[in-house]
Amino acid sequence: MARMDPQVSSSLTASTGTQAIDRAALLVATVVRADEPLSFLDLHDECGLPKSTTSRLLTALERTELLERNAAGSYVAGPLFWLYATRHDQWDELVRLARPTLERIGADTGETVNLSVTRGDRVVQVAQVDSTYLLGTRDWTEVDVPAHCSALGKVLLAYGGLAVPPGELEQVTPSTITDHAALERQLAQVVRRGYASTVDELEIGLTGIGAPVRGSGGEVIAAVGVSGPSPRLERRLDEIGRLLNDRAEQLSGLLRRRTRKEGVA
Amino acid sequence: MARMDPQVSSSLTASTGTQAIDRAALLVATVVRADEPLSFLDLHDECGLPKSTTSRLLTALERTELLERNAAGSYVAGPLFWLYATRHDQWDELVRLARPTLERIGADTGETVNLSVTRGDRVVQVAQVDSTYLLGTRDWTEVDVPAHCSALGKVLLAYGGLAVPPGELEQVTPSTITDHAALERQLAQVVRRGYASTVDELEIGLTGIGAPVRGSGGEVIAAVGVSGPSPRLERRLDEIGRLLNDRAEQLSGLLRRRTRKEGVA
DNA sequence: CGTCTGGTTCCATGATGTGGAACTCGACTT
DNA sequence: AAGTCGAGTTCCACATCATGGAACCAGACG
Image (cartoon, rainbow over all chains, first blue to last red; front, side, top):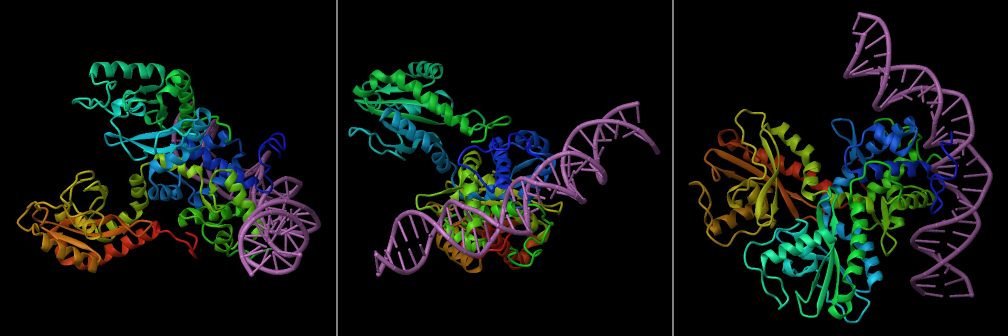
């Protein structure tokens, strides 16, 4: 009856008296994380439960509106998820999901951390974790700045989350890149390196570094980055750039569609 | 041990061997539908489960990321819901939720049914169920029309989902209302009656009727309506208006936050 | 320092979920 | 038309697992 070792299945946080629920939740999580219709068999061997059990659980989950079957009979997230999604803005939810990542970056670097997305043709900061230093950047959530001179803006430009505006590029400081060709060259480099940076280009003495966050389909949907005084950051550009890329990659992994063989969180 | 009559609990579709899951799902559904933090006790007496059971189930649901506790210890929807919401557009999900309602309206009236929302300062149709008549309106999903001469537009204007544009009101047909004062008077009437209509105001021979859909907080977030040839609809304005209001009310009920005493769907 | 409300842990009990095997259904072959 | 296979559901004896009353714990209030 025991499928494998009796006590290996759920290791952490000691679960007792909840086998059925753990399994049901595993099914739901698998469907939601995959984010594409999974057939009965997919779920059967993805989750490693006996056919009869799988069937019973899935039927119950469907009845309770946690899952639903599409026309082809495959399972997708059910009405409860639709309801939640209609009521909540997707960017707010991205912030929730990203919060732990931002905080880790904050702890690692000590600098102010930002998360940006494109809204229309503008870059807006949607979340911020403050610097541990006294000298940090102010809270500019919802403040939007020209894309071509902010690190997060450059990331979004470089990965196609945003198009480079056709007209003049505003000269915000003496260091701002205003030449289209030069900007394009930089953007190509951003893609090559996996992170973007601006030193004194948005404001004298302000340095920013950013990396791309990818959505479920692999498209770049947001950018994470840190910013702070140039003297403190200038020398750590590459170090922090790599760190950001790592962390952003992890966050992207969370958002990525997963089909096969993913350990239980 | 049996709380009530042994076979009364879950009547439809015969459930067997899934008590634990049904209960767990009930908890999740309650939290998601309420859409505001529910304390342990709220859930306890909302769902009528023994304390110990409630506790065990909630702990399991939290571990599996279906629920989460906020700072105050109350339960809210968990990371799995966030993930789903980040990946899906909220208007698309509204369409999913509304589809059954639209289809019922279509079946009731035989006319083309539309669902509209405001995007920025424009009204866009986001879903359509086609007329059973041959003479119906074409698919204008994503086509946006001036708000002051469409029934759904008037609904959104009337309930504050949209502001009346300050400038000239475009005269689309001879019947189009172009006078601001007259429009305001109509909008007030719309609120009084609970539905809006346009006869020949957008296109000669085209009549539309619409009613408001309210979101979780009670604000009007969308409008449902039917449209078709004036000869067929003109006489049924009030009848259909009431019908739409009823159906829209039902849909709104689905979206409304619910805190207490709601039967299991 | 006692008293409550709010919540978790224990544990004996048997109801409840389990899973192998039998069965059904439909599609595809021969 | 009969035969075969794969996908999925239903059955049912068994014992594992969820159950819930009671005891327990912790913090807030008086």
